[in-house]
Image (cartoon, rainbow over all chains, first blue to last red; front, side, top):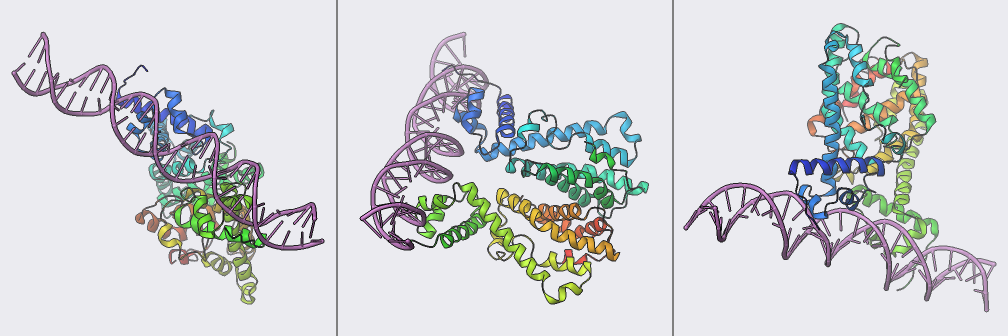
Length: 208
Length: 208
DNA sequence: ATATCATTGACCGTCCGTCGGTCAATGATC
DNA sequence: GATCATTGACCGACGGACGGTCAATGATAT
């Protein structure tokens, strides 16, 4: 067969991109390396030239996914208007800019509701490591502004992000519609209590 | 080979028991049906006579695991002294009676630190469904006693349990020792804020 | 005796990962 | 500038393991 040689970086990203799509739509465990290879028209060996195992490929995909989100958020932060906001508005900006699994929303939405535990867990864990500090900074500011009251900003951020995500992401578990709406309705008051914020200030969490 | 016929219920429980041990020590995905079958000295077909897939066997194991915990907690609740406690003491009793993955502590402790995402996620989800209502009731009582202040007891319980578990269970993700101790130190103030409880009342959470 | 059903183990298809080997580009040597 | 060695991207047949199937068989109850 004709052989196509590409820039290694490009090839690597191609593989990650294809794997990302498949892992998200078909579920990690039910995605085969052969599928990825067929989509890209490459041989088995090529994938294994770049990633020593399926597991390692997953790792790269997750990293890519979270990094994407991180960049999006950093872009938001560096926008002109951002600095003038108070901590609450900043938090709202960060939280509403599509949490985890953004940009790929269209793909997900439907098939998201399957159960892709491994991908989602890794993603959340990695997400916490990378993004919780960002939120923590804003929480800290809120405390200084006097609108929040939190003893441990970083852990508080991790706690909130983990809770919100785990309890509403059907990628972890097939939560029922009743469970989801029940939880989402309660989130504003939960987060307000957690941050010591004014009642109603996080009402927007119920309106996504 | 000589054939050993057992009471179906007993056989079923044998299989669940063996699978439970292996799933917890070796990790679900790396446990093979053949291993289970070898331990029990039964043929492959026998397992599939009781469980139509490995996945279904996992489901049964998780259910068993959580049910075990539920019974333990119900036993605690029905003890003579329990009813006389105030809500805070009751919560402490429930929370310190070994959360998820109790009884099997010895086995875990060490190998727990591997990464067994699927088992742990299912377990937490199932745990929330079954046990959050128990906690919610106590939280509700606390509100009536005036020592807590919570708008949505059930969702609040789910939130706390999910957060604590996800952020400290190395079965989800290999959290570092630094992360773990940092989070555990912060838990008292986080939970107190969430429940609107007196500062210091959940200090015991840092001392497990 | 015969119906029922728990049990067996050979067998199947699939999937991850390996490995020996190909080929083109790069750069050293004469 | 012609020749040749080296590198590493790429290939794809193959191995081995695993989840799952099924027809046959033995045990048990009636």
